[in-house]
Image (cartoon, rainbow over all chains, first blue to last red; front, side, top):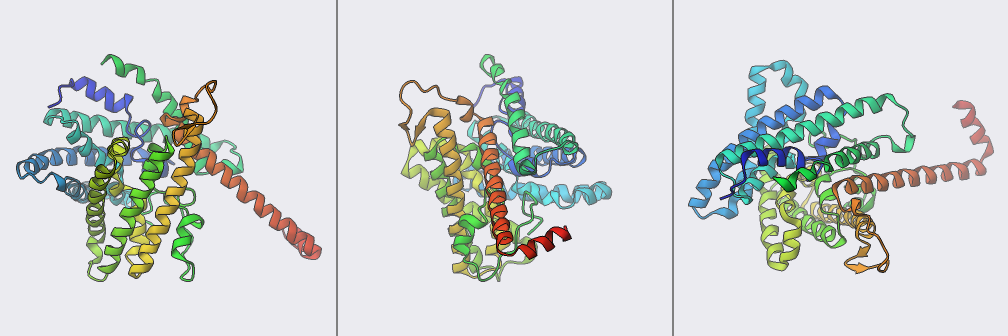
Amino acid sequence: MNNESLSHIFVDAFLINNFVLCVFLGMCSFLGLSQKFATAWRMGVSVMFVITVSSVLSYAVNLLLVQLHAEYLRLIIYIIIIAATVQLTEMFIKKASPALFRELGVYLPLITTNCAVLAVPLFQTSRGYGFVQSTVFSIAASGGYCAALVLLSLVRERVALSDVPNLAKGTAMTLVLAAILSMAFMGFGGMGNGG
Amino acid sequence: MSELSCHGSAEPAITAASNPFRNGLWKQNPVFVMVLGMCPTLAITNSVRNAVSMGLATTFVMVCSYGLISSIRGLIPRQVRIATYIAILATAVTVVDYLVKAISIPIYVALGAYIPLIVSNCLTLERAEAYAGKQPIVKSMLDGLGMGFGFTIALTMLGAVREVLGAGTFLGVHLFGAHFEPWVLFLLPPGGFISLAMWLLFFAYWKERSEKRVAAREAAQSPELAAMMEAGS
């Protein structure tokens, strides 16, 4: 059992070890979907929803797996839970807001292949978080993902208006921007030692 | 396929005649050309040893699971194909997870959570969807092998830059003597972004230069054609 305080877990996952900029999770969608602010925040919020739901479900299923001494099935079960949650989210959004569903369309199934989503249940298991700790961790981690995505999309919207050398157009430019953002987040590292 | 390619970049069509193994090695290098599988590419490349082991683990997963996916591709209903691919990949990854643990504990600790995360590496799923789900077994396995080695090469190139600049060592051997001040930034997360950006810039520059050379050579061979093209543009 892990005795970290909830506030420490939250700050750690949200800022100090930001999932995208410091631990390199969810890179593909971070680089691919950060062109426009409108898409970025919608994607961020749907990922937050999927991560929180799948984290709670995996916590429950992991208890069952430990009872059955079948820990080696963990990875397979977790990924199936995530795929099911994504499917559920898709159905929920389709029912609740058909307009949003049309806008997100292609991006929704992509959440399954987002490594940030799989990493949350894996980390919470390996660190031995309890139920409340897991939930706080999943909200903080996915919030950090959402924040990073939104920040990069805002920067990229501005950069799109400026004159970039031909060579650097595309991924290289995005990576340099991400590097600068990541350096800024390194500054939060100092907060980690006190907690 | 396009719905799965995480980066959304247009991928040149694979010609049936091209060798699937060599294709992945360089022409469609998963990291430098397709920009897939970014998470391990950036996270694990702070030393050459980690980069190579990560690349080989991914290669193993890809070859095994693509063989299996390709052999049962006729039985998988279209609606559940992605879930099936993921379940097969997850099985192969679980095998690798225990395998690495058995071979070397230090490497297992260094790679940490990134071994189970091979499942959700967009590269593995994207190739399963784009290639292994449609092609015969041997070709799919060759594709997995080529892509895996291409991935390993790219990871090693990144790892070499980061280890040499960030720690002054290559595979743990000191290169510059005692006076070298390590450029620690390259071992930290921003260094991963920067070194990948630098490699991409280098390749873009290289491509542009060789294209210019080809154009210059053609212009030298046929001045009339060049004049016509210039007039046209």
